[in-house]
Length: 367
Ligand SMILES: Cc1ncc(COP(=O)(O)O)c(C=O)c1O
Picture 1 (cartoon, rainbow, N blue to C red):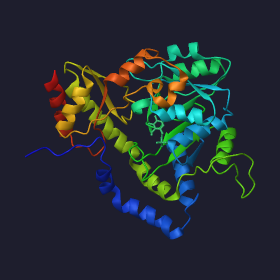
Picture 2 (cartoon, rainbow, N blue to C red):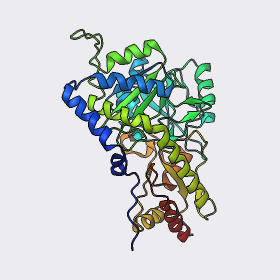
Picture 3 (cartoon, rainbow, N blue to C red):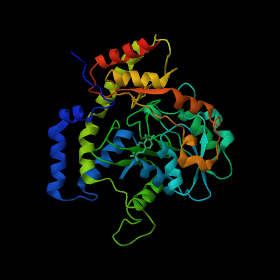
Picture 4 (cartoon, rainbow, N blue to C red):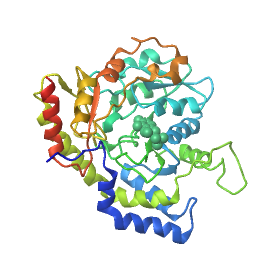
């Protein structure tokens, strides 16, 4: 008998476990017909603020918009610069560019793939208006060191927590540590909607008010437009579904931690597999190792019906979209090494445990 396919993430398995509640939440919005900024949006925002230990949360249309709006709410625009890690998903940099500012790339830590605080200061200029660390793979960046540099230069910190719902850093939750935290509710995220969605959290009343204007055409009162804002609201159907899932998120994240520990154990001794250094606060949005021969490993896993992936095969400066930044290959060697050797193995709360052994057998067979 052949082993069943294990996807990178299995949204159908999750839906099967919460189907009645998700259906009820969606049908509730249909019945109320309060599709835009309906009651489920306000409810989810209160619950998500409490979950993150932040004063305010606001639903927006996507994680990309969350980053863009956070920049604009902080007054960042043309002529300004924002420090962004060179190894991340493109949206971290796009949020800055969409606000009209320039992302200034900084290399990452070789052990964690997170923004390297030791390299930030050299990138700060008199145009720098914020530091934007990314909690990549579900693990918080070194926020003590980053916030200390930010405070010294009087800069706000924008956390890209799109992969880190519920992650903890010294007892504080991702998104609540800096000035403003940005989340994605893309379906495959640890807290994912049934379509696009995003959120912003902050404990700064002024930033919150600005965000509230910007996400709704610059107005909080109909036809009174104070700013040139966006149409970027969290859909009410999605908010209702997110509330159902938020109630289970800590449990799902704990299961991800258990599965990650099983991977660590199974892969630790395999020649050619380098584990990513993680801490107990990680919520393992992705389980990523580095391999000597990554492309062969990816092919072998796919041949064994294991849905491995790459996060990400290119650093930001290696993308055509950011060629205009003018960085040569070799500019950010640590980021380039992660891009060349990273390999993501399946991880999700409902994953069958034997996927760990199956993955280990394939990777062990390569060495
Ligand atoms: C690190 C990071 N930042 C930002 C985003 C953008 O989020 P969205 O897809 O909701 O626009 C994503 C995910 O897509 C992400 O992984």
